[in-house]
Amino acid sequence: MKKISSYIRTHPLNLLLLAAPLALLAFWLGWGDLLVFIFSALAIIPLAGYIGEATEALTFYTGPRIGGLLNATLGNAAELIITIVAIREGLLDLVKASITGSILGNVLLVLGMAFLLGGLRHGEQRFDSKHAGRNAILLLLAVIALVVPSVFSHSIGPDTSLPVEALSLGVAATMIVLYVAGLIYGYRATNGPLEAPVGGDAELVRIVEKSHRTEDKGIHSPWSLRTALIVLAAATVGVAALSELLVGAVEPVVASLGISEFFVGIILIPIIGNVAEHLVAVKVAVANKMDLGVEIAIASSLQVALFVAPILVFISLLMGNPLQLIFNQFELLALVAGVLITALVSQDGESNWLEGAELLAVYVILSLAFFLLPM
Image 1 (spheres, rainbow, N blue to C red):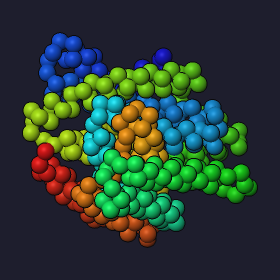
Image 2: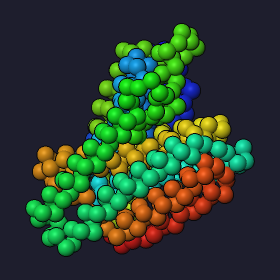
Image 3: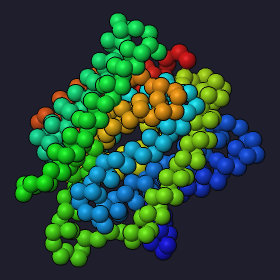
Image 4: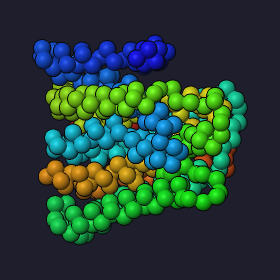
């Protein structure tokens, strides 16, 4: 417990945990939906970070391959929980917007901030163009898979028709197979170097592999196994409870503020669920570890596109609120533009502050357009 207390003191974001009891009080005492929404959102941010920290701690005990799989699977756990709650409430447009926003947030906002701040401090930075390019191409293929049902469904039938539902389920199943294939490729049992899986943390995998291969006593888990499991369970329960409050306040908040549910889903929800991971990507870029910064940004987008989005299709079917992979024209345009520019800046293995500013400019322009869309 002393380790947890020390961790809280050294990580300022954890002060936002104070918002959790405030969210509960705002809900129970009727302080208003806006305060419930704000406090819930703020409290989820550090809890999402704890899920990531606990998962990384578990990696040191499970070994690099199983641990890397945990890291890949739970990388977007907070956002997955929020979207599952939203599906149960029937907010399917919010869910689809959050999928789009997660991909855009990682490849434009996070990568842009990493390039910008890293470039301002170190000038031109280099990263593994081969690995980044392979991930960018896979992300482009994933976006194409999301585009196909959206384009073809208009000619196949109404969104609620059986053929359109079959198309969505077929595409989702194919994407999950591709995700699993990526995991198998990354963790194949060979004598060659271990590669990160789809959605995995390459640097973490390499560190853990080294710690299991050698007697290096300087590499160890920051938490005990028991502490990591307790923190993971508690953070997951906390995110689930706060997600109930957050999603329940969405509709009253958008109505009172005059903003669209679409904007909340595409900008606010992804930031709330992933801000801790976003800060890590920027931090390592400033520390001149651009390989890891690029990996975090692109791999997280891959996980959303290839795992989170398709798994939500099947979860929604089980919950009785079927979610089809049918996105509107604005989402499709933003996805294609964001992924293409990411592929372009990744191909040379070099980054600078100007490229970061360009990515951020695209994100700001898209955010402004989404904000001004009518409700």
